[in-house]
Length: 508
Image (cartoon, rainbow, N blue to C red; front, side, top):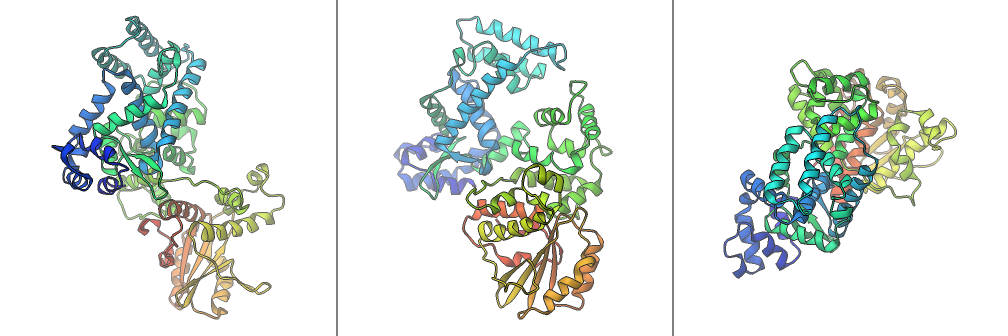
């Protein structure tokens, strides 16, 4: 949500005045409408990089240790990793306590051993912190600044720093006591006063904490953050990054100290904590990373444009996963479970589907794939498919589009779908239809390159557009649409794309 929209939805007059305190002159004498106008006029000051750095430093080097401990968790650990950079106020407090408890839990299990890649640095940091806490259990602002420099000089991550403090019984507070709601709310108010945090009321009348998108961009630039953690985890699941040798090579070229032997899951954890997504995709020189062909294929799979340079391809893949959002599954509708495993159903991953208890017979795979697609249109895209006559030969689904139809057919395959193998069937559906078919969508795991030529050849003699859309594209597009537009019907005209479907043109 951009700055102006946020300002227009701030909950109360007190919240507006608190935010206006940062840069609006004489804010105390202005009414609500005047404050909104003044905030919009001064908005550039709120996301100016020098101002944001000053405001953040004011929190993390504050005399009040609650501010120093809670503020970075609110900003970096929760909101910058949350969908739309917004969360219900009550939920934010719960997330902070959950995070603090996770640090205490990890501290109980954490041991510095000779196998640790940064053993000496961790031991030094622990020694320095022990000495710092000997001063009446207090660390002054100047001491905090010195500790900050030592931490970064030693290459200690923020989580490692917190874990060591927790082992000393000093995180999040003395004796590892969690912060109360009153303490957290006090810090949130101070974050408002320095212009980093805003409180808005959503359509359901619930108060939410949010960082406006312009300030988010500035914070990401300052912290060197390219992607939300959830998106990074999702990106690392892609088949192009499954090679252990590739991940090891990226870590080796990073020059970072690292353990000699790690399993793939440990490699990924190390990468998420220490290496930027752009380096994972593009390496550290022009000859490193994935080749352009792989990046083009990946972009195709995601429905993104491909006529770009290597750097541009990397940038758009990063943006895609940074914006990726999961959706909560409706357990009351059994099709929601099929939707959860949509890509596995499309790719006929029979062994994996059986191991999860989802299917018993091979035919269950095709049936569930079809039902999950109906679920997508009905529940997430809010478009009701046309009821078809049972017993007649027909495609898997039909949608009404003006005075014409849009048809779709699911193709569950272990390999790429080859359009030519199915065109006689699809042509029969199109030609026997009582109404004109504007678009025929083929939904599968992936498609052969020759499928593009086949659909082009067909369209030379037909008025029907053939659209090739992967299960991954349709699922992720539906999730994003549902998050952004709720019950609003998806404009079916977006499916009028010849060849490979591109999600990048959709206005969410």
